[in-house]
Image 1 (cartoon, rainbow, N blue to C red):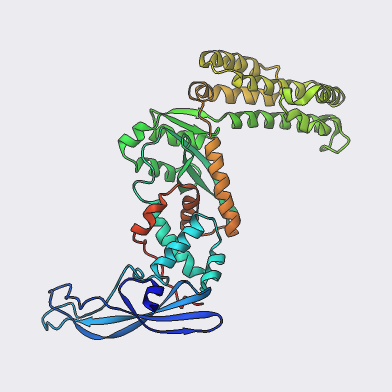
Image 2 (image 1 turned 120 degrees about the vertical axis):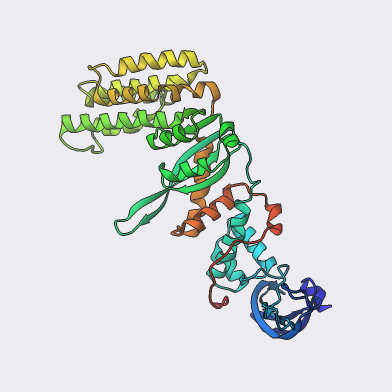
Amino acid sequence: MLERLVGLPEVTVLGLFSDDERVELHIESILQRPGCPECGVLARLKGWREVILVDLQFAGKAAALHWHKRRWRCVEEMCPMGSWTEQDDRIAHSRMKLTRRAALRATEDVGRKGRTVTEVADELGCDWHTVNDVVVAYGEALVDHAGRFSNVEALGLDETAFVRAAPYHRTEFVTSIVDVKFGQLLDLVPGRGGPAPREWLLGRSPQWREGVKFATLDLSGAYKAVLDACLPNATQVADPFHLIKLANERIDECRRRIQNEVLGHRGRKNDPLYRARRLLTLAEQHLGEQGAHKMRGLLRAGDPYGHVAVAWEAKEAVRELYGHQDQALALEWLDSLVEDFTDSIRPPEVRSLGRTLRRWRSEITAWHACHFTNGPTEAMNNLIKRIKRVAFGFTNFRNYRVRALLYAGKPDWSLLATLSPRGTSSSSDPWG
């Protein structure tokens, strides 16, 4: 009856010890006597080796499984095999400190449900490293499964901050590679641009790369170079949000410049341009009559040259690009904006915006043909940041990648029980 309660395959329970905090189960396998892996001769029992594993809670208490593994010896004198210890992956994989069922539960709790490793470790009564090792080992096998994603029509690239690394506390970035059509995180690679994203894309088959018809990105020259080199036939699409954000940044630069030229100091709470800073970034239809009247009054008081007003009108003109879905009309409108913005009489910030529009002309208007944006990529970045907050940050890229892909990479969780874990580093006593 106790063996049925334990629920492990083909074992016999040798003994049980329990106190107020922990349960210890002693088991032995009842598999038949094996043959030598080298010569096939039936082996002879040499002895036992006790292995302590962390198991799922038993009767609401932390459980330790003492597996008395049998040691076998080949009786053939000329056989090079010598002796070996039995192994049953249904109970626990080699070099694992958790039973298989506990490891699968921990991987799903941490990866799928977003629980912290510390919380799961406390529940199982073991240390942090014991749980993290199995989550990474099983999780890596799951997220690297060949069937996790297939053909991708629209690909997105964006960066997120990984860690502020010593010695100068420089921020290290990673690139998120996302299927923007289905909102799936495909992978994370080190850096923002450069060799790592190129290697990842070139590591896919030529047929897979040919299947990518659209590639979304912010106004990043580094990512544009990656896409030019690896996906030359894909239509690159500049994200509308980042273009409007750039136009707002140019307004803010112009406002700060005029503020210093007119008043000789940075904005203070009673300065007209400082009071107008929020209104300047709002879309015209969101200002309302009262907001528009207030903004015009503040600009009359603090913008004697009219530069900030021109920058605001330029931003609104850029926004009008996305007021329709006709690509030919958008190209015509964009060319007229470039001609107007780059005129020498325009403020320097507006001329800078015009040069950016000219440089990204085809990528900006490509949106009107496909309507793909980097919005799903930003959504994946939010999920990644949630995992970072739960973990209080990462310093190990392997841990970071596996945890993020388990949470946002849409793995097939039904495959978890069928996979063997990847190699992990050995640790000391799992009970810490």
